[in-house]
Length: 395
Image 1 (cartoon, one colour):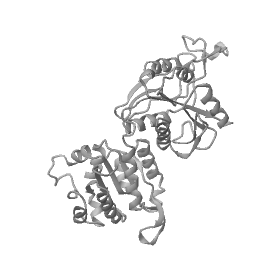
Image 2 (cartoon, helix red, strand yellow; image 1 turned 30 degrees about the vertical axis):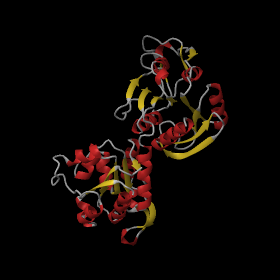
Image 3 (cartoon, rainbow, N blue to C red; image 1 turned 90 degrees about the horizontal axis):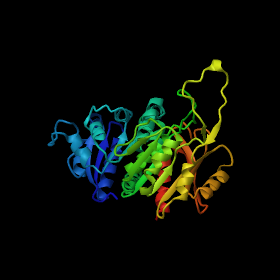
């Protein structure tokens, strides 16, 4: 997938910059057109002339010595992929927080191409909470991270933080480019967040869903070329190009889904829709002095079952099952009863899994009974696994 693709290779100022020379050579050998961008600090470890000799065009080091008036936008707009190897703690922080203080970070901020970052630093720096928070934020935004490995570091130290091997970095770039538009032409409808069913103008019946997993699926689908509609109750930011429909109650979500499902090729119902709602909501705030109110509940519409009942040929329907016991039995029952093609099941009682977490661990259960276990990972990685399974079902 690298053949004929334009790759910006960013090199930042760490001792691992010497490995970027080999990465550059391998990218060129794979047929990529490589544009090196070196930070000023990287020049303490490698030379601009080395990359200019190996790459497809001369290496750039600043915003001010380029033939283009805006080199960062030129590079960002024309790139099929931007890879940063090594990515130092400074570059990761600047990228995560939008601090455009050199040509490399400016290019990262100016591109809509997929981005791969390859952190490399001493163990103490890699494990620093601020660095981990920046990496988690980038992952959440769809940046692909090639994690460092354990091994020899500068100064004779040994530990986690060594840059991944050049062959592994290039293989990751190849995978990202191969997957970057594999959903092109598909219309994907995603729901996210927990619904709120009003008791009175102040109080509601709800659940712990943050919408993070549904939003991650929508962002990943859009990054891979799909036309995405996101129906969400969560006030979270979304990637550019996604049509967002904001809702609050189950009834509003049902109406929004009904307005779009007929045209969708793939429907992913990641929302945690309330099962019950008050039969009548009070017009005014209920007062404690008036005594304990009697709440009469009624079922909310089963949106997923309705979708399964009217699913058209060629449409792929994915449901979610958040359970606290008998995970596989409940998931299999949901697949059968609601005519699903795939269910994403997770045990929300497990540490780090499900509601309000940045991570998740799921089982993907298909209608034919086959399953795939996705171990604990950030929710964007889980989103990739879900969409990979959807593509496999549609073959």
